[in-house]
Amino acid sequence: RGGGACPPPAALEKIRDPCAGRPGATARGSGPRPIPGGDLEASGVLEAAFAARAVEGELIFLSVGDTRDHRRVAKDPALKDISTDFLLHLLANLRALGRENWLILSTRRLCGRLQAEHCERSCVWSTLWDDHPGLEPWRLKPGDMFLMWAQQWRYVARALELGYRVFRADTDVYFAEDPYPLLRSPLLRPFEMVVQHDFAS
Image (cartoon, rainbow, N blue to C red; front, side):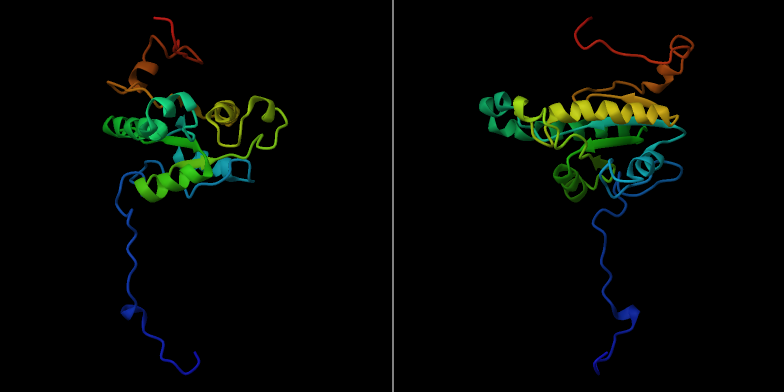
């Protein structure tokens, strides 16, 4: 246009996706599909995210927020990123076990970091209760882990209502073996819900 010659497509420089071929960034076989992120409160995002990340109706639901725990940072400023470190270690653990059907509830900012720095295209965020009047008395802000803790159960419940089987896990854990064969075993198969005690032995 404007008198200038338009180069043929073959002459255009191909822009390589830095995440091409990386785990978590591309779909493999019948496994989970990568997602671009999105607000679970926006129309259609929740249903699309569940459908893309679940495998044979099974979904692992994880959450990670910005570390704003002053106790951790006061002890060691390096701990400000510990929540993300926990998550990345768990994802590597699950991948080694052949499980990648997770969906990560995070903040929009942190989801962007996971995508850009770790090619992890399996995260979403939520604006649920961001303007709730109960936040201020507790000095909570959107993105705080304590708010996300409440949000996640709303979405776990919605996934169950839609017929998914949900494995909800903390991120500061390690699985020495694939938990699914045990959950599907004759011992646990009859149960609709299996819950691990947080403190009891």
